[in-house]
Length: 379
Image 1 (cartoon, rainbow, N blue to C red):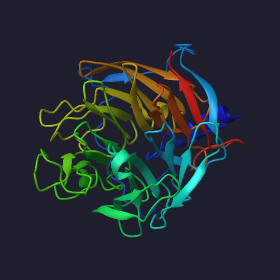
Image 2 (image 1 turned 180 degrees about the vertical axis):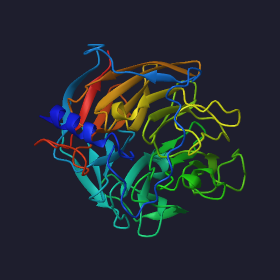
Image 3 (image 1 turned 30 degrees about the vertical axis):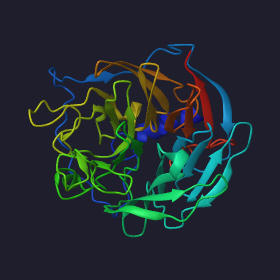
Image 4 (image 1 turned 30 degrees about the horizontal axis):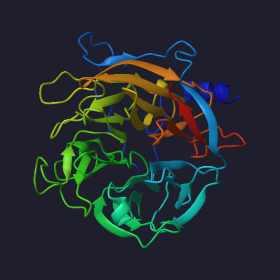
């Protein structure tokens, strides 16, 4: 039933502007003019990913369901003891999932203001959690998007402290992913809120990847030492992951033609809204892999076993992309239509992947157990 419903939704939505999928944006959001498509450009340097044959690698499989009955889980990260902390976008809840137990609520972040694609989004565990007990969250308030910090003592979440405020908010294209880098500083993805020109505005924090310290200041080594901006020209990045060579990658929503996987380079401009997919212009960075929007609408990203793993919402599948020496290749998809919309993928301490569904986010076709957290073995 889910696969049939999904195909019907795709056929209806192909003429609409995609945000997290092919649903039209909230009327109050500004919609950018569609950029020129590179669909027929024979010199396009990006790999265009296509669906794979069924069961392309039988070693990649769901081994168990870890949690059921959730409400649009969004961010997920792991604590030093192997348990996971995760957020629910629309309920404002922060929960912990321990081995053999049901999810346990440890607090709510009441400042969050859920609207369409916004609310309580990313979470990242401090690399110094053993000494500082700190968790970091990205959330939408009534006035902005912001990064906040709170401590967790093993029982409940402490008071919330804003560390970076004033990120533009939107009903759509809201960004929200957090990822600590090898330098111990925090990378933050932001969306352009439906205003494409914001992505090119050097004074606006929307449509960017930011790089900040744990106190919210511009991190050392930023292109502009007085700015948190690391890269620009993004439409809506919702996946960040470092590979084994400490190279940062980002998954990004396109508009009507191409979604993107980008290798992130300090100070680079990724071209939105001038280009969707590869533009081939010398002053802009091209993606390494592009997808038709009906096959992706990418969200979470993780690195494991020499591959990037990308969860897809509208595409209802998990993509695997080989990475070697800073080059991405051989995109392969798994679980097509089997679990519905897939939001977040994270590498657990034991080497398995945790994958969240997002069927109760207002755009899915939920089943009785949704939303779920699934555990995936890779070999």
